[in-house]
Image (cartoon, rainbow, N blue to C red):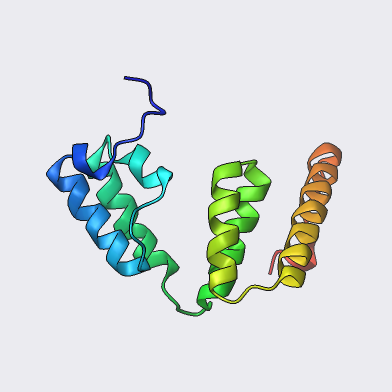
Length: 131
């Protein structure tokens, strides 16, 4: 069975179905997306990831939109096209505007460029930044 195989609800193990049901209820959607269908091959991993996602992504010191923008920024930086598409949609549902998404992408590009220079030049951290 190739790792890209998606497990639809009807063929999922009971443990995976339970997680799918929770996701559908929490997100108000008729079906889970392909990331969850792929993860359904490993219900224990799926459960852990879903529980961690709920915990980490709930509003706290950072609001829900900011958390989605951070997840999206990391996804862009890592080159994950699937997560970029998914979290762009989620960020917009949580109120992110086109301008905010555009600025976020600019920041990702700037950070990647700056990180590349700092890594290449082997810059030491300034004493004033170590406090």
